Structures are given as structure tokens and as C-alpha cells.
Length: 183
Image 1 (tube, rainbow, N blue to C red):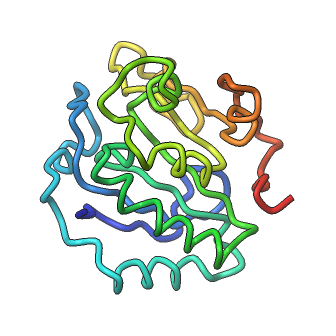
Image 2 (image 1 turned 180 degrees about the vertical axis):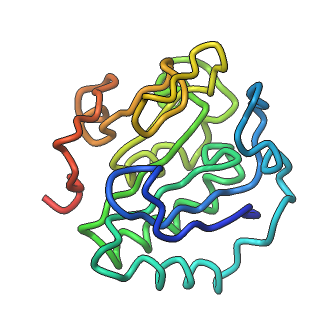
């Protein structure tokens, strides 16, 4: 897996101050994508052990509330396979910090309710490690600058633990800022 960039002190991709990892590789190719350069799976640098450790280090500060995974597309199968052990380690180090993931795939596609190439042997494990999933492709015709933590109105902000428990999408509420993994 390659990554396009790492943002520290990111306040745009989830509540609080976050460390954000932008992975490379995306097959959606959404019109007017903000990160088109990251569609290429080989773009950027390899996601090495040193880079993982750097992200862990950057996330250690008390003011960092969590990790956000963006792209490219974190839910491309080849990216999921690399991200599952990384997020497991992040959770072990920081059980009170949240993990957000942005995906152009929908909840229904990721959980297998709708057939999709993104679903693989790592998907269930990956979902179980997330607090929040922002799902759905960016749609230019539904672009709305007033939306919090998403770009177009078709995208949903989902509480993953509650969605998994309910067997259906459950919207994230702003007041639910703490990781259900830490409760």
C-alpha cells in the first residue's frame, strides 16, 4: 500500500484535532474529486513500518482526539488488508481515541447487503475497528459547503458500532464524540 499524505492537526475530517492518513488508490473516480492524484495505487510513498510508527507518534499528544483514514479509498481491498493491522495497533495504543474512515462505498456495499468488489476477507474486521464511517461517493450535484465532515448530501456519517449492532445504518450524532470502544 502507498499513501498520498499525512496531515497533522487536522480539524476538517472528524471532531477535534486528528491525525489523518490519505491512502493511495481509488477506483471511484468521482467527478471533481478533491484528491484526484491519489486515484493511482502507486502514488506517493510506501506505507512502511517507519511511517506507521510516525503516525502513532503524531497521535500520542493528549490534544489529538483520533485518527481519520481517507484517500484515495481506504476500503479498496488492497488497502483494507494493510489498514486492518495498522488500526488494530492504533486501537491498542490509544483505546480512548476515535477512528474515522471516509469511503466512497456505502454501508450496504461494505456489509454485503449489496454486491460490491470492495467486500473482501478484511472488511468485517476493518469495520469492527471503526467508530465512524462517512460513506458514499462524492456527488458534485449534491455538493454542499455547509455540511459538516462531508462534501455532498448523499454521504452519511454513520456510528459504526451501533450500525453493526442494529444490522442497519445508524447515523452518528455530534454528541457521541467518544469512542464506543473505550466505554
